[in-house]
Image (cartoon, rainbow, N blue to C red; front, top):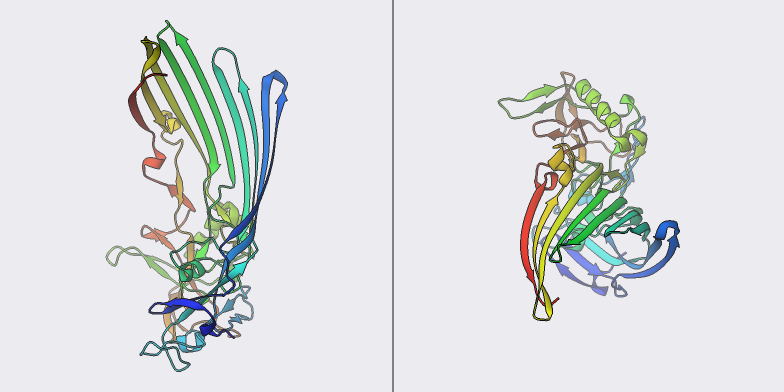
Length: 421
């Protein structure tokens, strides 16, 4: 039992935040170890490992929610916990029309309790080789592998949004360790530079930087409130092994004047084709998707910088006029298909159609009209879904090209005067 008067908090229309009186700001223990050694051919090898262990991290719970119940539908493989449909049954003390918490209320009232946890870790390993050649040449190559887990990514502007914005396959009050969403799992970096002085007053520098990486992680979630905790988009999907483990309802995609009908069977076929083209889903059939389990495709980018110096002595000091040209994403200048950033079409892949209806919902399945109640713990009605749409059509691929400056080459030119150097 939580006694609110024991804590300090701030109240809004439908949320209340309370802090444990022993709450501490986040604390991390950081350890690092690095070595440099000289290799044959005058190469320098660097190896560095970093480990961050959370000693105090922020932990959120919505303590006004009742204890959820396992779905427990016979013949249905997803047995996650779900909450009751109505606010009066979902919350211990819902809000009354007067804005007061009471068992007789019918309004949503989220009470977020903030305390500490010590679960979470970050680790990275970097290996790097540097080589300085004769005649102004230099090169380096580095690989960075990063691993990180946490309970909450910490997104949002208040505790309620941090609690509700953490995808889970269970109750958000019992979060599990999973991949952090703010790390780059793999990164390869290479650089090359050359500088040449000539005619006593000129110097040219050419540099190239290559960066290849998996830029971000994401979660595969349902496009509605599957577990009925009151918030959409924070329920991780169950990845069915075959067509016997999922039910679809007919879908009309597009506008009312140009809509295209897709039957349940057509969506089923599209969905399993989607799974086969997606590496993560293909390898995790029969499992719950992990938070931030999906990864962006590997992306390559090459940037080039050219500097042209004109220098002379003014008095006793060297003065330089320097012209610069930067070409970003140089590969895209050579080939329009190189260096593109790819974004997720629809991480909310499936949309449940009978998750929260208090009365039966009318749907069609392969042209046959049906009236379905919401699925309930221990009941016999299974969840039904529609495939998520992407720009007016059922989603069929995980990624698409990001049509923006991030996927194209671009340049900048500069001039500067360097004096007394």
